[in-house]
Amino acid sequence: MKDFLRTITLFKDLDDEQLGRLAGLLEVERHPAYKLIFREGDPVDAFYIVEEGLVTVFRDLQGKPQQVLARLEAGGFFGEMGLLNDKARRYASARTAAPTVLLRVDKPDLIELVRENPALELKFRAEVIRRHGMNVSALLGLAGQRDVRIRLGVPAVLELEDGAKLSVTLENLSLGGVGLSGVPAAWQTGFLLRFRLGRPGEPAILDVNGTVTWREGDTVGIAFGPEAAGDPVLVNRALRRFMEGRR
Image (cartoon, rainbow, N blue to C red):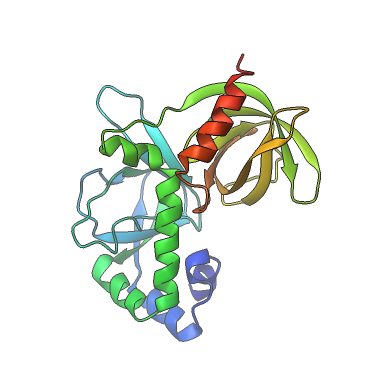
């Protein structure tokens, strides 16, 4: 169990004693496919790690299409939003998409461990910021604001860190992230990416630093990192430029 926990970004820097303590707090839950783990609005009472299987995190507002926020495989985790806030409730729902084994940590136990490890607390807070950007559409919706996800379907060019350029299709762009199709097979869920995004034959107009949060075929969703998440100036400027080439 300690070896598995060490593969998870949040816990990789814990020493053996701390990992052992965390492992002792875990409760194994086995669920069939399509089992609801928690519902939007429920109290935040636990943190979950996917040991096996697949979990979908989503919002399902009446009268609107279901909004999938994340698809989490082995090593993925969820439920951290609200752990550091005593009055928080779930802002989304979580459901298994296949037979799944979860590792559950009750909120009071995890908070005690986090408070004894300042570095771990910083990681949790950074993850909350990152996922805030990833799910900013939902959070803005709660505030009565709007973050319109426009279906673009326009050609785009990525300038990678090694200087290579990759032609893709920009499917959508919002405050929380970007959807691309025609991407390499290596870009799987959890893959960290850094590139510059632009229109063909033009200078790049948006720096992207984020994580692949889902993949279907050759299409991926990338959540922006904390430094780009929710920045309306950068994102809206890029969106306006790409809309000029919208088909």
